[in-house]
Image (spheres, rainbow, N blue to C red):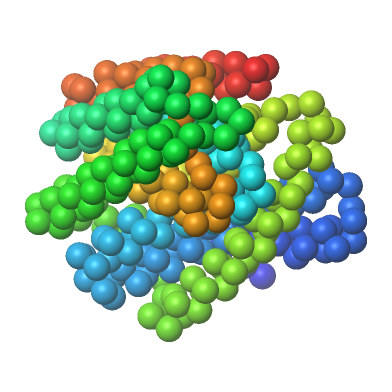
Length: 361
């Protein structure tokens, strides 16, 4: 009993596994929609954590190159599954909001929490300025690429009610360029793998193998199936919840989906910051944002085309302003290579203000 309590204290996310059978039970039992929505959302969190742990274990056995590719591909698997289900249901605005929310969540909320808690414990913390600068440049470039179809599509062709062929072609072209850029970034990382992700992982929870290859594959398969099932339940409950609570589908996409899909990775970033490994914490937060922007978003464009619900990378003005603000403030904070708790508070303040605005939108 004591061992179980100690294990749950060290792995608090796994307590939420109780929500998985409750979500399925509530769906078949026709419980109130708010309970179905809550249980399905909470159930995804530990399953996403298991996907991350099994991926890390497999990456250890496959070596750094293949392991890096495996992490890059499956790092946001839970969120990718949720958004694919949403695309199938035609909830394209929810999908685009989740892309924006994931980028902002990592840059403002996760990095802000890491700097705040790490700074309160260790004071001023240093991190790799060159790596942070390189990633910041790539982030700025990514936002500029996303701005192009959003700003120019209106002059190229119709967007509402259905995007024209030219708008779809522009979106596909941008997605292809982003995938190429992401692939080149992976190649560069493989060739010059001297960053904090390869040097500072000793003793960090979630970054070392927990299981054998066979166990990792079984856990990965079961967790993925579980996420698929819960994603179906979650997405079906979105519209009734929007109607019942009077909140927007946009708010659910930009706040809820990024949190439930990436909470395990968020915890790791905060934990390593509190261990005074700020370079690794910054790398995790920024790399996850880049992965969403350069891999997940383009992948969803191609997948949506195959599913008959073409997703175009045309974001509304609120999403664009939030992305610009988030990348700008994160770049300024990481420019000098040092962080403190006040900078963490500043990042969190921007995130809270944006979240309030999106809630009232």
